[in-house]
View (cartoon, rainbow, N blue to C red):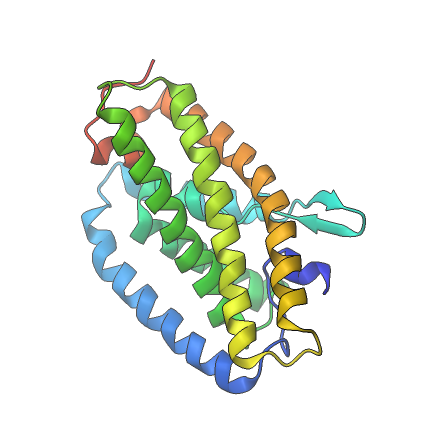
Length: 233
């Protein structure tokens, strides 16, 4: 397994053409749904934030951090985008970043673009936001104004779990049409262990960023607005 798999930007030839086409269609349908539903999340205040989130994720994804000898990871950004701008808008942000990286910077294969979008933009966003929403709902039953550090802890766990779920999306795709000579047990074990470690780094970056925004402009954090929370202390 190569470090390109660890970074979750799949290259061409890892899975067969039929699987690439199938998940490309899934990605198009999912992004089409997100375009339709994102209208419920965006207003004059959040549109600029969505652009900033996409630009931030694009920039931070260029920075790799070491996790094992010869293995590095980078921010996926699914949970971060979902918490700040909502799951549908967040998925669009990740999708745009992946398209630009693939077509202009050759970061991720063109034929694998649909799978990268499904893994990082759909699965990672959905899993991260689901965890964040569930945890924050539980916290809100105890207090109307949870402290920012609690939001940071929620963001950390959401990013960690979202990262692992995104990696398992690749495992599913490889199980359907893997073209590389590696056993499923090897692929699944490698992806799980490395992405738990990557998820820790992802969680730290996500928590720090979400807490910074929540302290300065809590009215822009989608998770807080959705639950009509008061300004965190």
